[in-house]
Length: 130
Image (cartoon, rainbow, N blue to C red; front, top):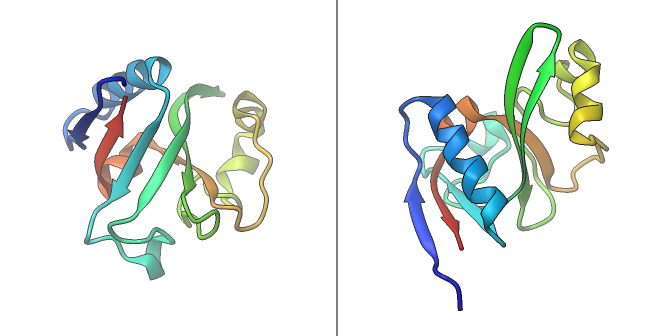
């Protein structure tokens, strides 16, 4: 059995926290996270105090911009994030090269979505990894 760790999401420097996630994602078999209790399902599409799998961690480039994106999957397989980089976000049209970099294949309400690290820090409370 591998070592399991629980880490609380740090609201500090997003770039440093992203590198921390990337390092652990590359070494982990499983990474899961849970939303904060204060999350508004109506506003965000996220379910409060609910588990999501981290299925991808990407640092991607669009024009002169760099984005640190996480790909997440709702453990229910439905109900998704509604903000920037969600399935129908205008960000995908604004930066079409990024969809190729992350292998985007949007399917309505399959539970899979993308989110920048700053939004992750805002809405998630804890990460578990092994």
